[in-house]
Length: 391
Ligand SMILES: Cc1cc2nc3c(=O)[nH]c(=O)nc-3n(C[C@H](O)[C@H](O)[C@H](O)COP(=O)(O)OP(=O)(O)OC[C@H]3O[C@@H](n4cnc5c(N)ncnc54)[C@H](O)[C@@H]3O)c2cc1C
Image (cartoon, rainbow, N blue to C red; front, side, top):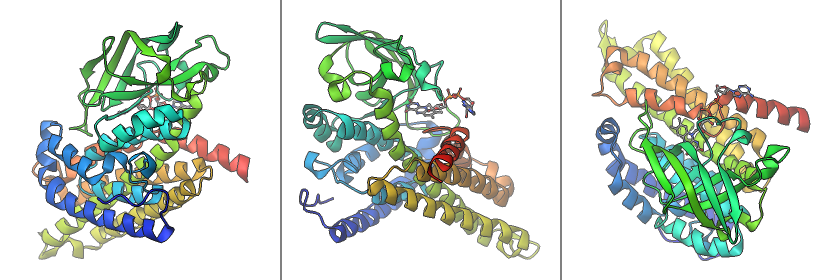
């Protein structure tokens, strides 16, 4: 994919470039992703060849500025690409999604030296990774994390355990949230974010077995006296990690919402094709009104979700705060994915239960959208707080 001239990109050029990219992604998805999705998912096998193709397509630098070697896509263009891939198979997007959240933390909050050192290598896919926030005792309530980084001369020494970390095994660099001042009150003032490249003292615990979202590795990470230079502290100042993380999660929520749109559309597409083929009582089941009602609701949910994602992404692109919009999009689109996959299972009848068909994967993958980047319970709280504050 050709990278546009640095910094000189007009809105029209950008729109054209993003439309071209979306078309290229569509071709790639049909040619390379669809044929292998079922087999790789069921074997829980890492799609290494797809990763090489993703590098070629520029996906590891999709939202990184051209100045640092990325494509500089808008959140809107990026969300459309994510949706398109998830219409067929959600898991491969996880290989670059949390990687780009890490990159966005560096680009928004890192020092210039950190940007120069890391962003071009992130954009090319040479260094890949994600974000390490969750711990065995703390997911939603991140201020309770126990991983600690203690200053030792020019270095820090990190000890603690992270869990559920996407790309934890295949990735070689992760943005890791720690406490630099465990006594701070409130706790978030003592939290910092480090860019950790794997090395002595930073090991991978176990690969976690999962209901869905297979083929992408989710792992426990263990830090035992992991020594890291203070140059790796994002932004170079302690105590900003919680805010830096929260900033990255706005893009993360748009991204999960976009996945939800793709999965809601993908479930509908599979159900519609099946309903046109499958006959009962002398006609295709799509001619039964009970099935038509389901198809109509599924289509409406998917496209309503798409509009909410477009709204959130547009706002993100204008640099405005978008936690309300991203929260609404994430909540609605993830529930749409879950409902559409469940309704599609009903339309497939007994065959929904067969691993010979694709729909059971959507049904297993969809619940994650309601958990990741802030559970939907928390999204509702964020939405309500914003309504009270803004309106
Ligand atoms: C496949 C997968 C991949 C993941 N990838 C990553 C990753 O790359 N990096 C990473 O850091 N983490 C990752 N996670 C972890 C994920 O972000 C957490 O699971 C999520 O934040 C929820 O945390 P928890 O599981 O500890 O649930 P808990 O925080 O224990 O919550 C349990 C339940 O209580 C509810 N709840 C909690 N607090 C409140 C409240 N105040 N009000 C109302 N309800 C509340 C929650 O909504 C939920 O329903 C991943 C998880 C999975 C399953």
